[in-house]
Image (cartoon, rainbow, N blue to C red; front, side):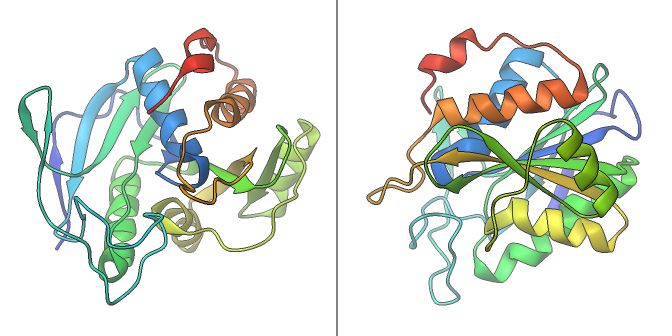
Length: 232
């Protein structure tokens, strides 16, 4: 069963949740990692689950299979033991709850997504913005939303729809299940040319394009200079 360890209280209630997970081009992962690095938010909670593999038996990680649960274990970071987890960071200005996602195996996907949403509701989250990628040439960003009003808001900002198809993994489930709980959501998809050998091979330029749109939507500034050479 998934559980949450609290490391502090959110610095602001009813923040906008920002969600990113490993995925196509690692766009969501790069984006949220960079936000945490640059904005220095406060770590307030960590979600753990026995369904988080240290090693996936399927590639890419976001395409799970019921017969391949992955391998359990820990990792070492700078010589210290670290359990696999989803991390939640709180920021006062702009008011954000940044979520660094991690994909559960097939059997744990809905449970983990539900626990993420439990925490959102506990912290008063009413809106989320998911950062992800989709496989096509170009550098523009397209969007999706849980309701027409949000979609029109995005389109007025010059962001068009464009992607149709499945949205795998934790971020997709949180986005969809959040709608059932009354959490309004929008998604920014960055274009990336898929790497057939390694679909998660990092595309920092696509992540930068998504972050530029995000910063414009939420009216905050961030230094993008280090992202041009960023790798994970």
